[in-house]
Image (cartoon, rainbow, N blue to C red; front, side, top):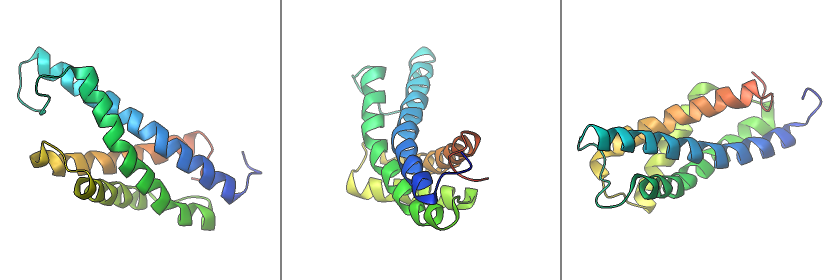
Length: 137
């Protein structure tokens, strides 16, 4: 993908970030939810719902910060075809914070952990995009 423009890189970056990162977040929440039920821990505010329903809600909630962080990174990709890992981490953390203000969570005491996970997922998303050849290293 050496002959693609930065506009195409930005388009694919937004699409992949907006779809793949919420899916990864939902998988992580489902894994934690299964461990939560197997070990009878009180980590997540699952309540009376199933792990699948909780993971689906995590996917829906995380789609907003994923899209927001992708849109925040578009100027970097348009200008240079890439963005740094620190840009990704900051965009992920700030987008999770903004999403928590717009869409409050039941387990608001977990917000620092969720913001950290958002930053970590954004950095992992950057690694995926580099390995896929979508953004430049």
